Length: 78
Image 1 (cartoon, helix red, strand yellow):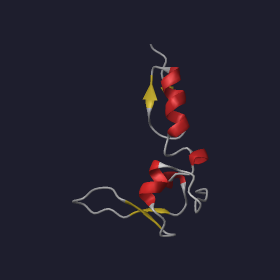
Image 2 (cartoon, one colour; image 1 turned 45 degrees about the horizontal axis):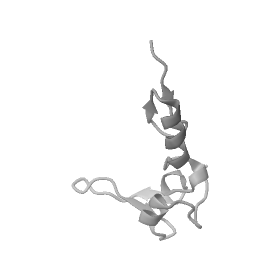
Image 3 (cartoon, one colour; image 1 turned 180 degrees about the vertical axis):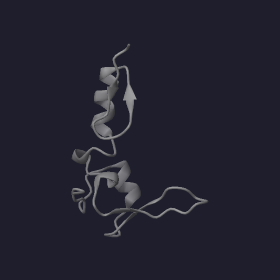
């Protein structure tokens, strides 16, 4: 049996504890980063052919929200 580390916010896992610390610090699902996937205003706006695409109920830039984080319109997904 081997020890693995799983992200507290998504399904990512690894055998390296330091790699997991780095991942969790930037994880899109970590609410402290205030990125789209952890916001209550995000919705799925994709189509079967084009795949997954996010949208924002507040009409904010989801590309910037995911890349940079710290969105001013971010609210916790209750």
